[in-house]
Amino acid sequence: MPLQSDFQQLHQLLQRYRDYWQLMPFAQQKWPWANPRLQQRVFSLTDQSLAELDRDPETRQAWLIDFFPELANLPALPLLSAFHEQPELPFWLQNGIPGRKVGQISQFCQRVSDSELPVLEWCAGKGHLGRMLAFSQQRQVQSLEWQLALCQQGQQLADHHQLPQQFIHADALSEQGLQALKPKQLVLALHACGELHLQLLRSATQQGCQQLQLVPCCYHLIPHHHYQPISQHGQQMSLTLSLHDLKLAVQGQVTAGARIARLRAIEVEWRLAFQALRADITGQPHYQPLNSVAKQIFSGDFIDFARWAAAEHQLTLPATLDCDAYLERGRHHARLVRRIELVRHLFQRPLELWLLHDRALFLQQHGYQVELGTFCDASLTPRNLMIRASKR
Ligand SMILES: C[S@@+](CC[C@H](N)C(=O)[O-])C[C@H]1O[C@@H](n2cnc3c(N)ncnc32)[C@H](O)[C@@H]1O
Image (tube, rainbow, N blue to C red; front, side, top):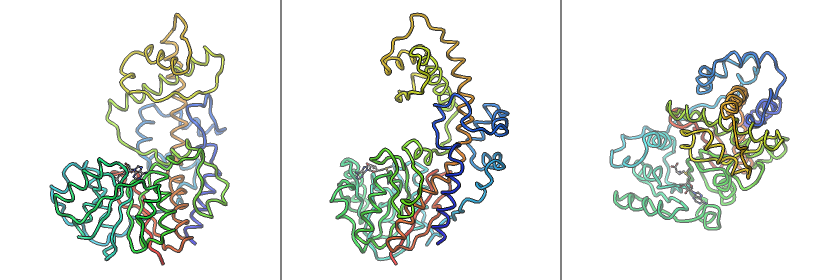
């Protein structure tokens, strides 16, 4: 019942404040919500303090909580209990794994219950998680992965260290993926993208896998234009989520260096400057998305970016162009867009929680006992929510 009531609560909050998050900030020429006090509050920020606030979800929420008091009562997810301490991992086992990934895997392993069940690692990459588990719990691990080179590299490492880990080179979305899942199995998935973990939920419940531990990510990577809720409760709810909406759920606080942050700021301003230019050329003020482009273009001159963008939209630039004037319009527009984004980002967590609850309720509906929580600190990964489920 708490899962269901928490889901309902998240749903009401998201519905109530739709105007603040279910929108494309880039496409807004003016405030999308009529809330003069909030407009004043966010406009009182300098660009620098806005950027700092946006990097710090807790302070951001505290600063704006009087406008959205329900945000203070989101379902609180605990750090999931650890079953054992992770032994100090030998350096040779950590070789070649990025530092934060080692931390994530170590925390994940601590939360895997000891049992005789063989393990299947879903969408394993090089199988770092499976390898650590094969080492620390000395249990049989199969690691399913689609890219042959990753399977080969992972298998080589496991063989070299004489660990009980076997790779299965297969497409998780195919019949082979389904057949790899067995009733007497613990299935693990760390950062399996949208459809890959949704398929896991469908296939694992079909096969009756005994235990599941899943850390979802990239909710927007699905083969539909809109999210199709997986649980019966989700299907009864009136929340239509586009791929753009879903991306909000994975907007994390990846702390960028000063240079990257500066380039990002330039990118936003130049894209908006081009938007103004495009509107002048075509007479159409509507927002038209531009493809992504190699970031080095933003270290050059605006005119080169404008030429590239015009070619993308099959437009010819005027013979003379007042770049400075457009850049000024871009900067001005960016001030508004960043403030709309700041408010929108308040709803990242509730949306991610809503999506998590949809998955959890699906498992519950199929006879699983489900725990939701975090498996590591957000500084190791902003995608730190875990579903731990056992068949009743
Ligand atoms: C985000 S990575 C996560 C890898 C690993 N679990 C980790 O946390 O480091 C997702 C993995 O899924 C694999 N993948 C993508 N599509 C797949 C498919 N259809 N079947 C199996 N694996 C797939 C990718 O090759 C990639 O290694």
